[in-house]
Image 1: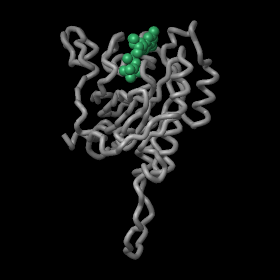
Image 2: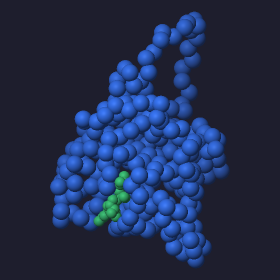
Image 3: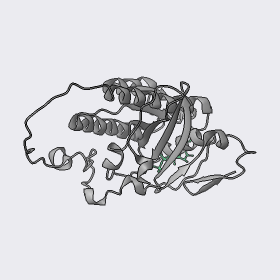
Image 4: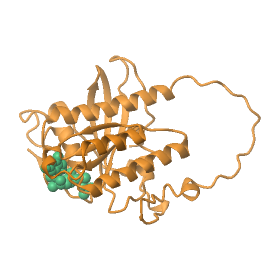
Length: 266
Ligand SMILES: Nc1nc2c(ncn2[C@@H]2O[C@H](COP(=O)(O)OP(=O)(O)OP(=O)(O)O)[C@@H](O)[C@H]2O)c(=O)[nH]1
């Protein structure tokens, strides 16, 4: 299992091994994280999910003619984010989702973006985030304007899209592929040769864990509670379900699809 979650590889052409990209979907409960994930993987909109299940799915994609092994973690933070390090340290890119008909979900998305910014500062390693205003089909009940979404994204320097999990698949796919492109850019940047330093070996001063220094892994999220790192499950324990999108898209080839969050898709 550990090899499944191994080190990312950056390839440049279709001949090379697939690029491996881990993508985490964050957002308040009910924002539509599962619906978007399932839409992307299967082209279908499914309206009911078990909100307490968190799964990581795997899909073979082709982005800009390059094969990509994409893993998508559909997170399920309870009312307060818990054990955020499980995705902060795992993902190469993040989709932060709010619902255009929920002001509260928009505010929470801002807190998630702050959490990501703080983590990037702390680790000196930034992972791109994309902000998604979901449920565009519910625009008549808007509580968040498009301009507000764009402004929040601008504040954190991330891409912004309004989408709907129950409208066209192509738009949702485009957003996921944009996340792959962003992750790829970052991975390529990090894989550039770095200057070589030869320094005297010295014991590192004791470093307090990230949690203790900035309260980051404790995921203080507005008024949220503190979380013990010991509770954090290893990512490799996450259930991995492989959905090949080409098969998923064909009813004939895949009469019964792999279960997603306990739901059979026919
Ligand atoms: N109209 C509409 N409803 C949506 C859309 N996306 C999700 N929903 C509905 O919103 C509700 C919540 O969607 P989920 O996908 O379960 O949301 P989530 O963010 O995964 O929530 P948790 O699983 O609780 O973390 C469900 O009833 C979905 O059917 C959308 O784009 N449009």
